[in-house]
Structure formats: C-alpha cells, structure tokens
Amino acid sequence: MPSALPEGEPAPPSGELPDYALKALGSGPFGIYVHVPFCMVRCGYCDFNTYTLTELGVDGASVGTYADVALAELELASRVLGPGAPAVQSVFFGGGTPTVLATDDLVRVLDDIRARFGLVQGAEVTTEANPDSVTPASLQTLAAGGFTRVSFGMQSAVPHVLATLERTHDPANVVKAVQASRSAGLKVSVDLIYGTPGESLVDWRTSLDAAIDLEVDHISAYALVVEEGTKLGAQVRRGQVPAPQDDDEAAKYELADQVLGAAGYNWYEISNWARTPADRCRHNEGYWSDAHWWGVGPGAHSHVGGVRWWNVKHPNSFATRLGAGLSPAAGRELLTGDQRYDERVLLGIRLAGGLLIDDLRPEGASAVAALIAQGLVEGPSALRPRRVVLTLRGRLLADTVVRRLLGF
Image 1 (tube, rainbow, N blue to C red):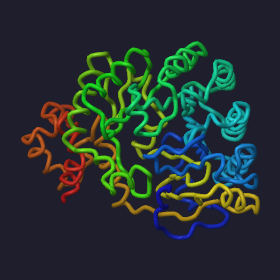
Image 2: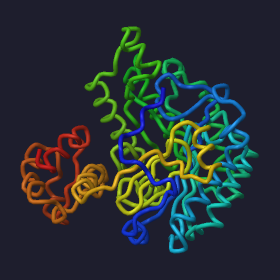
Image 3: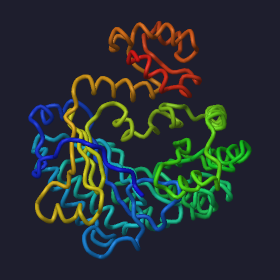
Image 4: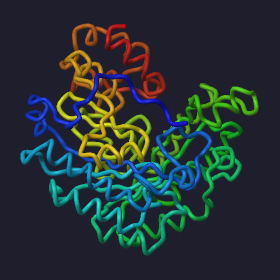
C-alpha cells in the first residue's frame, strides 16, 4: 500500500496561502510537478501513491478523465498564486507512469501550464516513462508539444533482478526507447536501483555498463529501500528473500561512482550523475535548493514560501474535492525558521556544491574540522571557497554529517 501522508494542521478549503508565502514566491525558481497515479502493474517494492488500472472505477480521476481533473487543480493554483506568480522554470510529470495517459492529454496539461503561468525560455519539461509505455510516434508528439526530457525506469539490465523487483519491461526495449527519444530530440535519463536481493556485484556492473552504453545524458542510481506495506516488505519479513545489506549497498555505490565517473558522468547530488551541468535535472535541483513548486495530483506535495501542503491520496477523493470547488489539500505545515534551516542543511549537503560554512550556525561551523579529520568532508573546499562538500565516504555517511552539522 502507498505510504501514509504526514501529519499537519488542516489546510484551508480555498487553498489560500499566507501573504508572506506569496511575497516569497518570486525569490527563487518556480516549478510544477504533475503526479499521474496510474501504472499497468504494481511493482513489489513500490510504495508510491499509485494504482493499477483495475483498482479504480470510471468515476473520479480515472485514466480517461485525469487530464481534466489535473486542469481543475491548475485553475485553482493560478487563482491562489494570483497574477504575480512567476513563469515556470521546470515541469515534471511523475508517477506512477505518466505515459499510460494519452500523449495528447499530457501535452494538453502542459499547454494549460504554459497558458496560465508561462514557461521561461529554455524551460525543462520532463516526463517519467516505462520503456514499454512509449512509441516513436508518442515521443515525437511529446517533443512537438514542448517536452524536453524523458526519464526511463530502467532499474536493471539483468532479467533475474528485474523479476525480483517485478518490473515487467523487456530490457531490450530500453535501448529502443532511448534511441527513439534521442531521435525525437529529447534529453534522456535512466533510473537504476541497486541492492535488490540476489543481485551480485557483477550484476550491478552489468547494469551500469548497459546504462553507459545507452549514451544517455543523465543517470540516477538509488539504493533499494524495503518499505513497510509493500509485497517485497512482506517477503523480507517472512524470510522469503533476504533484506538488503548496508555493506553490499555501500560497495555498489562506490562501484557506481567509479564506473560512471570514468565514463564521463559527474555526480551533482548523492544519487545523480550528469554528463554536463546542462544535463542535470533542474526540477529536482529545485527541491534540493529550497525552491517553490506546486504539486498537482493525488498525494502530491507542494512548497511555496515556507508553507508545505499535500493533497488527499485517493484519485477519486481528489477529483471529488476539486469538482466541489475545494482545494484537494489534506493538510499543511507552516515551517518555522529552525525547520527551514534544518532542511537546507539536510538537502544542501547532498549536492556537489555543498554548503557555505558562513551560512552554518556556530554548532555546524565548529563541527567541520572534525568532519574533515574523519574523511567525511573535503579539506580543500572548506578552506576555499569555504564550503562543506562531502567526500565519497561522506556521501555514504551523509546522515551522520547532517547530524553533526545540526549539533546532534
């Protein structure tokens, strides 16, 4: 089952935001995330807020009606943010599998974003996709409609690893999908997962080499997390499959960094590598850099000017609220200054640019020397340009670094 929503205070039925949040909106990048909560099948490891096509009826936010419901939330967003909202710098369609929707519907949602808010010149527009959920014609339609980037859920190039993850795509289709995307003029990213039960170091090297051979612009590599409530979680709990091991995942991360680096990919966030700075995912950089974004869709999270809110999870409840003229928000947080500082440290330290020492509170600045001595933070970067930048070992122990910088 999908993970639970966080706790918070009730969100206003109108969706209105405090004046201070609206005033802050122009102070940084503004992005829009569109959550598409549908998949053809549910993978055993996934706890995202997604539903298979047989789990929902035709009422509410079904595949056929979802674009119209998303447009209703965009209308709400334009009303709440008002005429002073800045042009959108990035749009990200995630899921689920956005490309289970009709391609024309995806373009129609993007067209509405463009009409309501405007897109900055050179805006990044990404959709996630499964390799089996696109065709050369659909990719051409996306590119013609203004999409600039596609991110494929490759996960592995090894059939038995894909089977354990319950991924249904044919590995050969990854090559075809990437080639068709490049022919359409789209930038391409692939996602990989390491630490799957039964995956050897040789298996992981095979997947890395396969991703590199695709000559994509961007590669993400994530350690498998076994979530409560998932099929994989139940299998691990019953002892049917072994739990991922920290040492194994650390060895696979180190291998990824070595192999990707040798192939010309540079890490810019702990789990992300890009060929050039222009190939980085700018939308995700906004999340890591305390930017503003509006999340459209059931269970989607938003942040504007220190206010965070999240939508109701079920697609039909989401559609019902919007149909009644109400915000779909289930709850919200008004972040304090301390909370925002903690998050800037937590997320900023994940980036290759690190954190300015002068922006740290005294307890954080005083911890830097010991972190350098322990090999978790680069010494030269701390001297000039006075930034806290993680070493490879520090990336593996990033949570420890965060605790020290926050004085714990």
